[in-house]
Length: 409
Image (cartoon, rainbow, N blue to C red; front, side, top):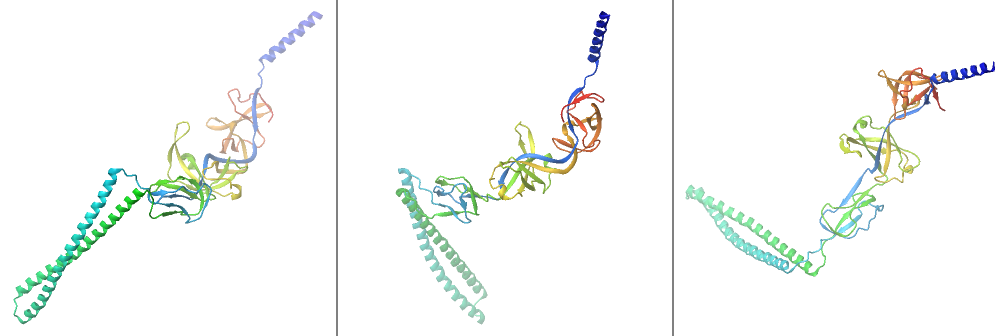
């Protein structure tokens, strides 16, 4: 009997092992819950702060500027003098160039002498023409008297009148020529004065002349000093930049596909700017033109600049400055009470969205209707209720009716 008893025990153990080996084992899965909570759909991108009004102070003319006293952060009042431009320093002349300069002075003096002689000649011609003009005017008066009495032929009157007009034209031309010649004299004298002054400055090696002030077009702080050292500057060369450091805006370069979803007045949440609390802004400008930008991966992207104004109190962001980095989240849609599931629980089934729920340890496939969604969660408008357990990242091991084992939820 004992032997048969042991045989029965061994047979039972073998049957139990065979049954356990062929029985299907539950699949271990990760799971989440359908919950009611706040959901926000955003478009996120890096941006930077920018001064709303920036003024670049530049040199209006060519000149020599001393070293600027201004530093970044200094306060500038409207109309305050930034620097005084002096005449450029003289060029060092060698012997040949100096002789050429002296020859230029002598040439200008000769031109002056010629112009003065021309003026004297023209003045003499004018006196002669004026004497002729007086004679022919008297002749015209005598002719008028004789013509009325019939003692002078009409042909003689017309010939004398034509001669009078010719003389008048000659006088007028002589007067204009004298004005021109006198202007040439003044130009020659100015050329001589400038040439002698330049020659004296070169020889003496000193700077003389008028100083031109460069003033600030607006008040604010110095943002950046472009040209600090002394030296010669050219017309239009930037010296420094001025702006109101508290009038900031945020510029974000969005993909054109995301920019079309953003509207004027859209709420913007700024994070990772260095402060403890997020900042808020509102979209003010969406530029109508896009541009091509190469991404870090070498892909061409069409982007659009979106400009937003800070609406958080200034005390919350008074440490921000021009060109500071921020991360901007444009809020496209949000709600405080939405039935939602993790986005990784959704999959496509027969051209519809579906999830696997867990009911009594069995996986059940449910077709759902999805509303708004972001990278982490999705709104469920139909097919689930709050508290339902859903499987995350379902793969080919999960199927309808399959036993599953979930961890702690």
